[in-house]
Image (cartoon, rainbow, N blue to C red; front, side, top):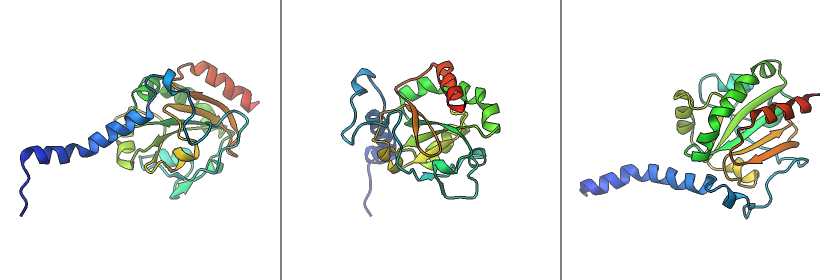
Amino acid sequence: MLKLRPLSCALIAWAPIARAFFLCAALCLAPLGAAQAAPAAGPLPEPGATLPTLSLKVPVYGQDAKALGVGGKMTFRLQDLKAKVIVLEVIGVYCGECAKQVGSFNTLYARLARRIQAGEVQMFGLAAGGTDMEVDSLRKNGIYKYPLVADERYQNHKLLREPKTPFTMLVTPAGKVLYTHLGVDEDIDAILARIKDALK
């Protein structure tokens, strides 16, 4: 039997963590200015554009599937959400810039509660490269107060032209892009104003 030295065992144990760190480094906006250029996959979605059809995995955490109205399914599309406007935030589970934004977006989610209950708005985070276990951990730890959707194989991230994270969009269920922002967006009053305008 092959015997591994303690150092070898330690390296094997840390391999998944190292993988996650380097994925985060590739996705996160650091520095922000250097991330403004569009990735090689093509230009990022812009207002007025229509998104390709996203096949989104139903959340695994607690009541998230119910909150989005997609319980009992394996996958869902934006068209399946009962809403007129959807706040879609692309995040990285180990993204430092996303961590800077999460507090204000938790507040945004709380302030949208009445409109969410009325079926006017929905909000969720798409965890680019995130596994079910990683997403579940973020929700259990209370870091994110709103639903998160795992995108472990970057399937939907690629369809969105591989944006750096965080990347925020306001879209309709039909996929029409109303607003986008690359990087930390803490002006939730401005986002709320845009949502109200879109609901008129």
